Length: 478
Image (cartoon, rainbow, N blue to C red):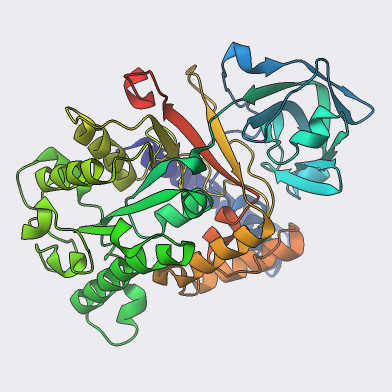
């Protein structure tokens, strides 16, 4: 059982215990006070739960985030009269990642409305949100604010929280990865767009490699009258089409879009038995060819056998053909989805012994272990660093800015993805309505799916897991 499953199991156990105690209390109130009072209290309690306690947050908001960055990247700053003042001149070229450590303490409103840090300079303003009740060290992304920062014109203030003490600034320098050949490894159709649309849409040359057909959980298509097998096969075909067609919106040539057609949530079992074929859980097939038929390239796995060995052979052939200088893939520590973990491990294994090696591996996190709402905040706002509350490893974030036009293009790409089009369940829609009314949260203008809020932002946040001149990636170093 992975860490996220353990946290979720503990969260549900604690919730059941709280519900049992609440029911006992309501019975006592009904017996001692009035029969109707428990009904009223139950409705009010449910509304309060949906408004303020329904987030899957598996750590205390009073915990410090724990990040360590290279010492040479720290630049002394002072917060004076609400303005961030560098103590030494800052020479910036626009490709740096600017991370500011702040200490927050939520006010009483910050326990009911999402607290955040308001960043303003040179006519621009951003609000980066955090957990309700946040208290302790947090890390703000100053990407796009470098000019105002260097000139001492960057203003900071808390929203439903106070900024305490003095902040710390790290300036982490990167090459312009948009000027290099980029390959994005996507476990499922839409992972590339969620994590790196801004990067691959601007890259000099880009490849999108999707590992699975994403055919499971096809309830939406069953409601059209299809049986479960037919629905899974249709969903897989649609998502295979999405993986080839949607990157064309960003100018990626069709020949550079590859769908490998392996089966969703079967990568861990494939890895455990590398030579054995593992069929779909729901589509009643062990043949990947129906989902690979749109590919322009011939690949070793075109025999249709869904095995780990075929997956590795496919990846090796693609790397040798594309010769990517940068590979973007799921982060091995931050992203707990089993297919995402296996995608990272497959890529690392496939690189072993190849003549061509990428200079840089960049990791992304489309899911987290302990906070399903991250990135917190609204569509169009910046992306602060995610919660890391344990460990002592060194981190190298890489933030890429997206202007309003590219954010809109990214939203349109996500809207083309069939998996993001169905309406959320009724209960989730009611919860969001309650949160908009009572917790001040905003709906995304681009769509109802939560990923429109989470992914269409001022920044795309990636992490360097391998740099030029190193032989180990982040996972091996851990």
